[in-house]
Image (cartoon, rainbow, N blue to C red; front, side):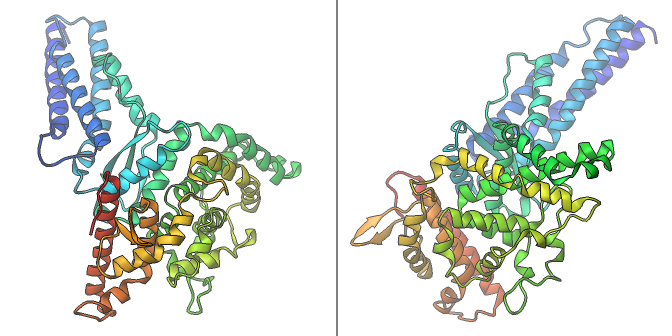
Length: 472
């Protein structure tokens, strides 16, 4: 191509890139009315929009000559490629974030989780933009991936534009946006952000290495090839992060997090008719995977932490089969679990040698969430108010202001969430018996009352978050 041909080619492709950026970012333009967004999501959308304006301005001046020389052509091509590829990656975030307005995310729960995380060491300025996903899963976007794309693009088109510091991105299934209790799994995804942001792996990496060396005798290590010697410690690191996030979720939300995990992974289906764990139904849940520990292992460690934090004594008498499953998991031991690859048993042994260091790391970070007895701060209030909250819900009253011992009291949000979650599991029949259609076998009516309990609980959390506001 001669200079004119190179120029025309660049002009066309630059205009095409301009159009792509403009259309990709168009949905980010926020109005003053509906829809409205939580502040972190608003910051995310505003940043993408501002980045698009800077990108379009940059492209408007590019290329700047009619006779483009080969070196200049190659340089322009590289910049166009960077801009287009970065905006391709940003395209993934835009519509899911736009869809996640305050009516389509569990707003009260997200605020509660944010408040709890900000009590964790070095996390007081963290905030989270919650976006949607079409996958039936919860996940967190590693901080480095999104931020690197934005920063690399910003250095080209807007060096002064800085990405909001301490902004994490987590996603929930769009179909579950209206649920309260199930979305407690967001606590696990927030745990991934904290794990990465606070470099928690650095503090447990040595324990992982020691566990690996101890679990593999020198003769066994000699039998491993170079790929396995590198891969297996990385598997242990992945398992360690997943366990960290589970335990972090328990610290943030208490039993409600564990109950959410049971429901989402359908773990209650592992109970046999006599209430014990059915080894056949639970077979896959005893198996470790490459990137996740076995699901019943995770539930086992969560149940152990509930006991450590004082929650178990307060919830163990609940009649829900979910609580029965937690009780059964408390009896599990190392021998129950497998990893079906060569040397899989050695890898699990190595992981078991690192569990204490992982638990210590979570406990260190969450010190402010425990009382002087090293238990959860909310346990004593929960013991005092859980029956009162259940009574309120049983009479279709929002439990945000309680009348206790001849005075009105605003309960702690974690106390309400957990008491309501237990009621959701075991109190629906009683609630239905008080209705004009008392048929507990009617699934459609049961669904209606379950939804109402979640709505009343959500309203209670919203009221508690407001100063001097009660609710009924």
